[in-house]
Amino acid sequence: MSFCRITGTGGYLPGTPVSNDDLVARGIDTSDEWIADRTGIRFRHFAAGHEHSSDLALHASRKALDAAGRQAADIDLIVVATSTPDQVFPSTACILQNKLGNRTATAFDVQAVCSGFVYALTIAEKFIRSGSHRCALVVGAEVFSRILDWDDRGTCVLFGDGAGAVLLERSVEPGILASALHADGHYHDILSVPGQVCNGAVSGKPLLQMDGQAVFKFAVRVLGDTAVELMQAAELPMNALDWLVPHQANIRILQSTARRLDLPMERVVTTVAEHGNTSAASVPLALDVAVRDGRIRHGHHVMLEGVGGGFTWGGVLLRY
Ligand code: UT7
Picture 1 (cartoon, rainbow, N blue to C red):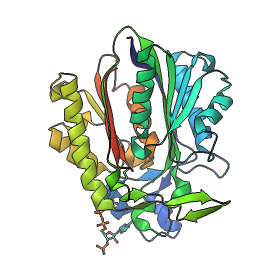
Picture 2: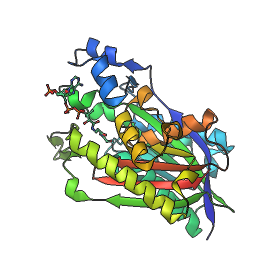
Picture 3: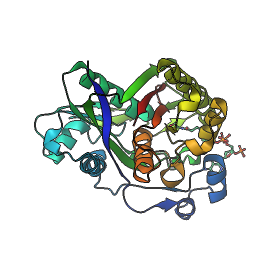
Picture 4: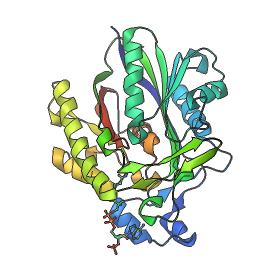
């Protein structure tokens, strides 16, 4: 068995920032004060009509390749986490592969909503550690603006579009130290888009619906539990953790999680103010920001955590 480590990161946010006041100006019955106080969100980005998840993914992937000093031809595995794929099929990963000009990699999508990136990263790690692959492009990419109910102020102000990517490569040293993936489909209806394509039409309601308070409580519990599980699996004390990079849904969820873990907020990477909840893209976007601004450095212990629809949750602990 070999190890693997992240060798490059990239992020992409489409268009210009849309402020809370911009949403008010668009006729949504809300306020900057309510959104900022309850969620910490100040801006989000929306893709243009012609931009799909694969386009956002392409920008982020090119940056990750550049950071790793790799070419698209070096990639032998592409895993895209998305709940807003370009089409029913083929996978967004295959569409991205074509846009990158790569014709040989294994390519597929993962659907685990806001936990999608940690699911995809863990799957890619298992491919590499098995010896079958050596260089994986792992992406979280979303255009959640396409599935928002603009008449539901409790959800439409929370989400945005974006993509984040990492290159994961075989290495002689770890790299990824521990990972954990969980799901409990009993909670499938507290966060869902209950629509489907059927006989040439959409049936059901293909717009996001959420029981916000149930999701909030669930997220705080499982983000805390998963952090403990990962540190125990790696036989490290919690104070050995340099950076927590959690799913960026709500600053209050991140603050409650940090409190539960007795972790100072200075060690939690937060980008939710700048892009809102970008679902599967949020963790790699936050990771990229903290790598590029020099906070996350070689040798640091970094924990990535996701939680979202399904319900799904999980995390990856790594030495950067
Ligand atoms: O990836 C995981 C995805 N989701 C999440 O992580 C979200 C988790 N949940 C949350 O972040 C919070 O539950 C929300 C931010 C969604 C809501 O915050 P809350 O403190 O649970 O508010 P609430 O739903 O209990 O609503 C409180 C009040 C209500 O008014 P009344 O009934 O007290 O008069 C809502 O109608 O806030 C009102 N409200 C708003 N007011 C202004 C709800 N949305 C808005 C809004 N602007 N956008």
